[in-house]
Amino acid sequence: LEAMCAVLASGETTLCLVSLDLISPPDGEAIRSRVGARLGIPPENVQLHATHVHSAPWAAREGAQVLSGLPEALADAAERAASRAVPVGVRSGRRDVGKTLSLHRRGDAGPDLGAQTFWYGYTFHEGDDRPDASALVSEMRSRWLGRAPEYRASDPPVWFDGPVDALVQALELVGDDGATVGCLVRFSAHPHMADHCNPWRYDADFPGVVRREVGRRRGGPVMFLNGACGDLVPKERVRFVVDPARVEPLPYAGPCWWLQPAEEAEQLAEIERIGQAVAHAALGALEGQDLEVELPLRLATGEFACPLDPHLPRSPREAELL
Image (tube, rainbow, N blue to C red; front, side, top):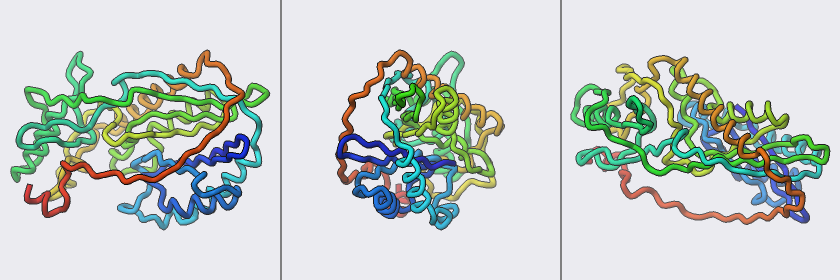
């Protein structure tokens, strides 16, 4: 797992980007305040991003105390980054990968279950690239009927084939000597694949593979940005099985921990495959792009309320009644 800081400056504007292999920053205000004070910039000029890696420590598992030293560590990293600043040109590009690497995890699960969100455990049919959620629907329906989980695909299939963010975007910062100072790569899908392993492990998931591969080819550090990925997950082709010992009692609004890969090696291979594919798309997006050397940096920040999905239960009691 990694944390990374990039300090960018143009004219009177200095911006610090911070990317963390966490579900979310444990104390965003403390991080922005500490990093901003060290760099002499307003806290709002410190932009935090979490790659949302599910296998990282988080409160439900270990508590944020394991991350108590993070603000100071990030301030140190930001200060080192600023001390190494050099003039750069910018090269950017994007590659449309369609629905080959991600899928929309929310869809219609039938008249009795309605709209549902499934994380993983989809099945694929020979010669068809669409994810079939019928096994997941069967598993959920069987538990709501008070039976043991029945995880098996059925006919007709339940296609979860909604819209996705198809873009892999890449930005490369190049010094006067032609060497890569650093890269940013953005692709939107939940990095949750390493979390399927049992027991779970700290792992940067496919963003870690992207950083490794792009960095190996370009020769500089790479920051991965996830973007808006709420209903998007990697299109993993893994055989899953139910672990009866881990099935949670009702009410529980979705299949989760008791589904695990039949072969852990298969799961880890999918992390590598998807990460390599995203890296390949990012590198291809940068090929042949012009280098821009006059690119002013502008920053606008703000906060807004994000309403909850009205289809979701408002309380455990409402979920039980449903």
